[in-house]
Length: 76
Image (cartoon, rainbow, N blue to C red; front, side):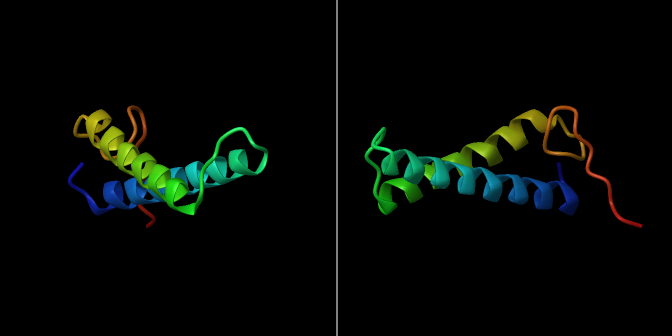
């Protein structure tokens, strides 16, 4: 967990999760399932990103990767 590779992978995962949450919130707004303006969508995306980081830290168990069974490999 204390490696640069871990935090890079965690940041990438958080950005992906935030983007997915934002697209989902705004997409559901477009089809009328959920009413979410940009502010609501960004708040939801930020919360999802925070949860992704907390999940990575909680499940790392001291491993190199942010997931339970994931190992980050460094390029030679």
